[in-house]
Each structure stands twice: as structure tokens, then as C-alpha cells.
Image (cartoon, rainbow, N blue to C red; front, side, top):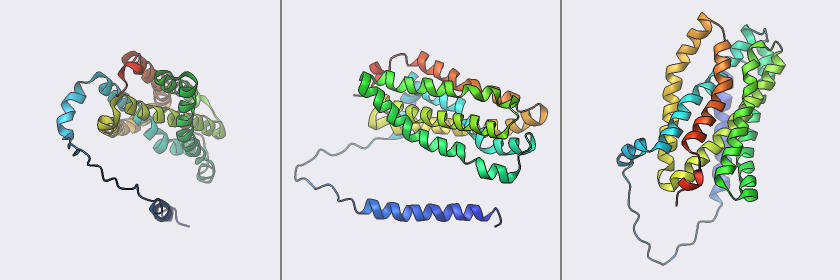
Length: 250
């Protein structure tokens, strides 16, 4: 099969998933209507919120952290197959057979990150501890990436990538949840959107530079950046939000 057909197959699978999703969610009975009069919902102009949010230290912290970290994940997704093939001599068949494993680790972590946070909250009843404990552990799990450049075994590199993807899943789950904890239902989506935009702009700027760094030097500076920036981001998070409990949305 031509590799281009894989994109078509992925799209078809998405539509199949959508079909079953609509079938399942369509069978959920709607909430019964109440006869009680509810006060009209006041519409917000999101653009009016932006200046205030951009002046908010917590919002700026979330935006800056995403700006720092998003290029790392794009580096993993777009450059690791090339690295394994050209630098470590792994065949495309080998890469296709095993490079799905980090993405499986990411999916598992996305679920476990929330579950672990809930578990810690039930034990300590402390939102600040629950979120930061998970994010701190996740940041430490990225440190082995520092050594990816000196590892010769493609299998071991994929293992390190699986660890990094797992760490990212735990991190991003608690990072986004922490935004909801602080900004509540009215402003959370705006802050998430701003931080995601910052990550996209950062990746747009840095991805071309990645090719320049690789062509001019080696992958080593990229491994160093990828290995240290999650702990650095966690330090920034701890410094700028020392006690989330004081900032929780009412």
C-alpha cells in the first residue's frame, strides 16, 4: 500500500469514530425542562477580557510556559523518525513498527494524569498539592531525554521517548486542569486558547530553527533543551503560583 493512503485511512477511521460517537451520545436522554424562570445569561465579550487577562500574572505564567514547552513536542513528533533513520540507522519498517508506542504512552498518561490528581486530592484534600505533585513528577520523568543523544540503541531511544510522552501527558492534563482551577468556567477557555496560541506561535518560530541547528551542529542542543525545559517550567510554575489554593476560582 502506498504510504499516502495511510492519511486517507486515518481520516476514514475518524469518521467511523464520529459515527459511533453520535450514535452513543444521541441516546443520552436530555435533561428535563424545569418550569422555573431562570435569570437571563449575560453574554460576555471575550475581547474585553483580554487586556485584563494579559495583565494577570497567573495567566501570563500559563501562556509563557506553553510558549516554552510546545516546540519540544513538535520536535518529538516531526524529527524523531528522521533522527532514528538517518543518525541511528533504523529502517523505516522498524520505525513504523515501534514508534507508535510513545503515542500509546501519551494516551495512557492523559487518562492517568487526571486519575492520579484526583487520587492525591482525595488523600490530601489539597488542590495545590495534587496538581503540583503530578507536574513535578512529570518534569522529572523528562530528564532521561538529556541522554538520548548518546544512546545508540533505537529501541532504548524509543523507550526514552515513551517516557517523555508519558510525562507530557501527565503534565498537560494537570496544566490545563490548573487553569480551570484558577480561572473557573468563565475565563478558563480563553486562557487555554491564549496559551495554545502562544505554543503555536512559538513552534512556528522555532521549528525552522530546529532544521538550522541540526544542519549546522547536531541534535545535541535539542536534546538538552528538551530534557531541561520541563523542570525549568515547573520551577517557574512554583515560583509564580506558590499556593494555588489562594487563587482558586469561586
